[in-house]
View 1 (cartoon, one colour):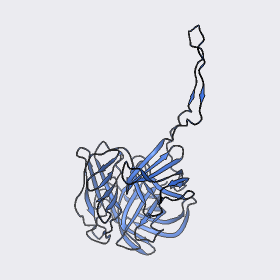
View 2 (cartoon, one colour):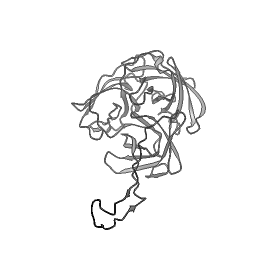
View 3 (tube, rainbow, N blue to C red):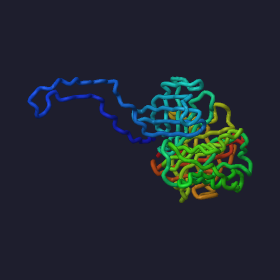
View 4 (cartoon, one colour):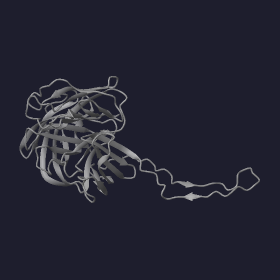
Length: 375
């Protein structure tokens, strides 16, 4: 499904005209030069902007079909990578990106393509546009601080070097709260992926003032949005790299049948081989059983013939509101997953399922599955 996007009208071209004879005057005025400068084209209007940590990433999707991606060491620093080109939506709902220009020592070169999964005004998960990074970059609607509290659920989207998804002391999904009045952000619950999903308790992400949608606390870089979507680099200064989390507004779920339908998505697996760590997928869910396949070509929608199954039929609103747990099976190998879900996001009305799980390749590593409905 090609997702509809609101398109703002472009400004009128800059043509200056004048009346040669002043109204109501008996004498002739000096002629006024008429200027018609075709170079005065207004800049593209950003329909959607996304930003996120690791280092500091920004994506603008413009109303003329162009996009711009930049990466800098920190907010406000000069960009050390920039990529731009044209974007379009595929039949399955992926964002397809042609690379018309790039700069930076590790930037993907002109002529290549990239892709992303967008949940409008919530989040955007970008496949690598850097030649030295094989992790997905997940961002949220950027640039504006929220004006009220945020109550959300979260999943880990990139783990620290010391993380172990098979540990009972692991922390991979749970609930997150942000206090507008205090400027404080907390992981209110942190659940492991092992049996029973033990809770590791609360964890403070620090206090700070929000500026342009970002709080840089002593311990974490927190990217907030008006929609309530949040992404955080937890323990950003840690020697083991810290952890990245994605949070979306918390919704108490009704029935798992509310998620029946078709989805476009992305699977990331930190335990997979280079070149296989981030892959697009299409999925169909019925009564909590989701059957999918990897996409070998985003543009054509061709499938790889590598089916997998996600089973979310066993729990709902557990271990907390808006959360559910289950398993993912790829090639006969099964791992546990913990998911946050929303049957109708506020801006697009899409069904969204976002999961953290145990790697199919190496169980200690992190696997992610993010799905957005396309029907």
